[in-house]
Length: 120
Image (tube, rainbow, N blue to C red):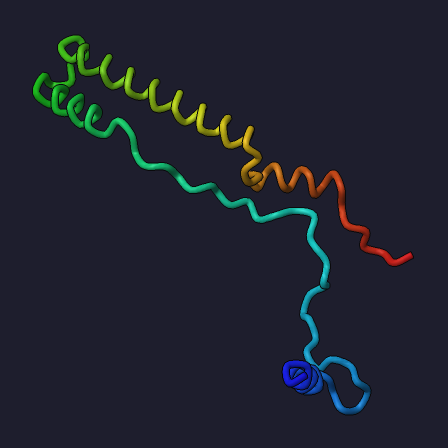
């Protein structure tokens, strides 16, 4: 009973004494929008940094001649392919598990089923 009394006090403070209407007025309409903010997802950690630095060191030693650094170039490209395959499998796995929607997907769904803004 004591908890109910404290809630009543809080509600009575929020209501005006004249008409019983709320004192606090929203500055925007209290309705969901049909789009979400287009935020980019968090980037993962950098991959193949060591292979890239080895390749750049080789280029610097050979005055940027690709033929002399073919081993380093192939190592770097193999690392990039592995990283891309890992990232692709990770995104497919998150889609299968039903993780969070990307902002673009959420906006598409919200535009397909918009809010009714007029009252009947």
